[in-house]
Each structure stands twice: as structure tokens, then as C-alpha cells.
Image (tube, rainbow over all chains, first blue to last red; front, side, top):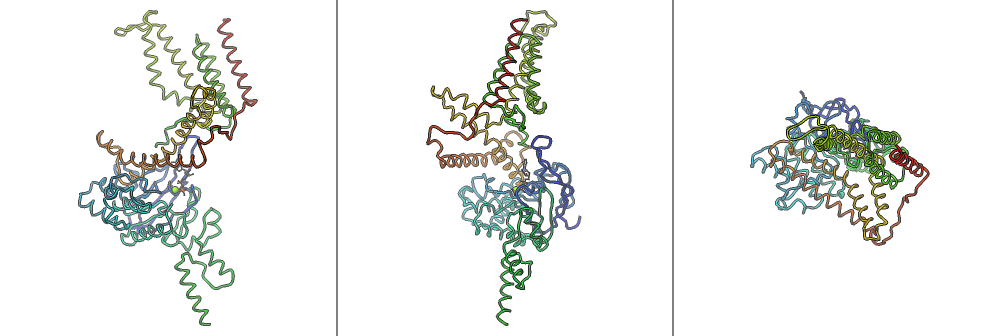
Length: 289
Length: 267
Ligand SMILES: Nc1ncnc2c1ncn2[C@@H]1O[C@H](COP(=O)(O)OP(=O)(O)OP(=O)(O)O)[C@@H](O)[C@H]1O
Ligand SMILES: [Mg+2]
């Protein structure tokens, strides 16, 4: 197979099938995620994002449909599940609640240990992962429960990263963090994407975060994919997004308003950095006149 | 996977049985169960079974859900049957198995015991299928209230029951999530010998305990923040009161009992 990494074909998932609590959470999805992409998965609460991503590493089995990783059906062979789970790393929402070991180091080593790696390899991977997420060597031997909230979360992300997955999926990694903690985590994720070249799928409720980092957006609504495309394409549909309970970044609203008032600005501005540049140029022009 | 386990399997629906006063339902179920023990012959069981069938029909709970409870009981049923078959050696002998004798009387008793058990369990399931756990504990508190003066902490018992019930699904969800998170890190719970498997539970149990304690702590704090335990006389949001439907149900139950007694006395 060529350079595709995850391919989903007619995926459907029904919870509690055949009971009074039956619920179709994913409804006939088909799409591809390419190698090296930084994908943002957005959708309002209950739209099926978490359900979808649990299929990517075979934690949930499809009710019908298939998922291929590099051309291989991940559910075809039960004995290979572990293999795919290490190739496709999944960081759950509030991952800090999965910490259990006596030290931070041992907890991050849990994944690599399960892969049956050698001691040296485990050690080097754990150190590398902890360095990427910005955890200082001085706390390697502390209990993970003594860390601050943001540090706990980073340690948990490192626990998945240490398995050296080719794809990493993060389910709302910034939920419940303060703005500084959020930026730090997101920057580290962007760094992973850049340095390690891994495919990243970021589930998020924040349009700002998505706009700032991803190169492709998938919008989910009631278990279906409503839109999929580049940030320009998606955030160009402000009205449609609002209709399904989502929004465009705040700054995009500002620029729309400016344009409506007759000021000559582009309307495809999605991040504060872009906005700053545009406004700066605009001011310079005004000064010249 | 963990969600497949149904506990206190409430089946939500809008039937007349669902809307009955839960206190009444508990009392009527107990009465029905007691009546089962006074049945003498097969016709009596037919009568009890028909009445139960009628209630199941009115409750609009699919029969499949009622019989699920019986499936779980199959071992006990077989055990009861075998025990009874061999415990009447003095009757008309049919066959000898080693030291034991199978008699017609023994078989008859075994059949009756099994029918009784099936009716008993089905009757009790109808109660839990049509009454939400919260209603049940509420009703139990009310029924126990008269014993409060004798020192029975009826309110505390009910509160503990409802908190426990409330947290069963939450903890199951949590367990499910933790299992998945550890599986995502390559944990393996299915292979290996007994010791390895027991060890593989550690990464689940530790986070689970931590989260259970955290939740308990948070809940206690939230309850205290709303002054729980300060006033001895709590009033409630939904006062239970017997309505027209309830009196009809009482009427039906009295009729059931009357026919039962009449047949026993005069036939
Ligand atoms: N284990 C489960 N059992 C039954 N139903 C479930 C389960 N998990 C999710 N659902 C239901 O499936 C639907 C999709 O849920 P999902 O968690 O995938 O949504 P989501 O997009 O991740 O939402 P959020 O943004 O709140 O995390 C919801 O309606 C939810 O109630
Ligand atoms: Mg979710």
C-alpha cells in the first residue's frame, strides 16, 4: 500500500445492540487519514468522536465495516491486536486516571515493558518520551500521584509515546487544564508531530486549538462525518458549524465583522498569529497614506 | 463488555405497573410470594402463573427479560430438583440409583418446588424490572420508617443503598475506561497463568480504588456543602401517595387472595 495510514470503510458502531438502550454512535463512516497528517476531530458532545477513535486501535470492534492500517485489516487477526495497539497509540480523556505505578519512570515503562523490549531499550524510550513531554529528570523517581495535574497528564501521554507509535490519537488532551498548561501540552504535541513525524489525531472542543495546529479537520455530527477538509474550507462554513452546535475561532468572527464594516481584510483568518500579521500590515498601509 | 452485566435490571416503560406506588409494589410482591407457599396442587400453580402472566402483560416488559432472571437460576433449579427427587424414599418406587430410590412422590415434589421457585423469581423480577432502584430504596425507607423509634436507622440504610446503586454504573464505566486505557498501553489480561493474570489486575485495581475514594470524598463534601445531616427531619421532593390506580391494584390483589382462600377452603 502507498502512503496512507488509516482507512475506514463503512464503519458502524451500535452500543447495547438488541436491548432497550440500543444506541447507534457511529453511522456508516468512510474516510482516510494520510501518513504524517495532523488531523483535528471536532463535533459536539455525543457526536461519536470517542467511539470512533477507540476503533482505530481495536479497543472497540465495529458492529459492521472495516478499519485498515497501512492496508491491513486491524480486526482480522486477534493475535495481532497488541501489535496494532502499539502502532496506534491512544491517549484517553483524563489519561492521568490510568497512572498506577510507584514511580513516574516505572509508569511510563509499562507500555514498552508489555511490548517485551530489552531493559536498555525501555530505559532509552522512557527517557526520550519524558523529555519530549517536558518532564524533568528530578521527578522520574517520584510517585506519579505527587505530580501536579498538568504534569500527571504529561506523564500519561509519555506512557503512550514511549511505545513509539506511528499514529498518536489524543482525546481532548487539554480538558480541565489552565490556559498555560493547555498551550504547553499542545506545543509538545505539535513538536511530536514535527520531530517524530508521527500522524496525530487530535479530538478537541476548542476551535482555536484546532485552527492553530492541524492541517485537516473532520467534523462529526450524530455519528456521521458532516464535513472534512482543510481549516480554510471548514471555517469558511461558519453558519453551518453554528447550526450543529460548533463554532469558528473567535478571531474569525472579528475579521468577519471588520469586513462587514467595510475594512479591507481577508476573511480566512483563523489564528491570532495570522491576525496579528494582517492587522500590522494594514496599519502600515494606513500610515503610508 | 462490562455493560452487559445487568444489575437491578430496570426496564423503563410507561405501563400501569410502572406507575404504581413502589411501596405497594413491594408489599404486593411479598404477598404474592407468600401465597405461593400455600399452593397445594398443580391447579393452584396454574392459577398463580396465569395471574403473574397477566401482570407481566400489563407491565409491557418483554417476557424475555423476565426469563433472563430464571436462566441465571438454572443451577439452583437443577440442584433443588435432584435433592427433592431423592429425598422421599418411602413412596412408590420407580427406580434405584445406588443407595437412593426415585419415587413418584419425589418427582412430584421436585416439579412443584421448581415451579414455585420459577414463579417466585419471576414475581420478584417483575418488581425490579418495573421499579427503578431509586424508587425501590425510597419505598424501603418508607416501609422501614415505623421501626425508626426502635432504633433502626432506616434513612441511613436507604441512603447507603441508593448511593451504592447510583455508583454501580459509574464504577463500571470507570473500570471499562481503565481497562481500555491499559490495553492501549499493551496490557494483556487474557493470557498467562493464574499468577500472571492476578498480577495483570494491578494496573486496573489501583486506579479504580483511587478513583472510587476520590469520588466518595467528593460526594461526601458535596453532601455536606448542602447541609446533609444537619436537620433530622428531611422533607422530600416527591411525596408518595396512593392514587386511584393503586387502589385498583389493591382491589385486584384482594380478589386474587379471596379466590385463593375460597378454593382452598371449599374445594
Ligand atoms: N459505553 C457506552 N455504552 C453505551 N452508549 C455509549 C457508550 N459510550 C458512548 N455512548 C453513547 O454513544 C454516543 C457517542 O458517544 P461518544 O462518547 O463517542 O461521543 P463524543 O463525541 O466523544 O462526546 P464528548 O465530546 O462528550 O466526549 C453518545 O450518545 C453516548 O451516549
Ligand atoms: Mg468523548
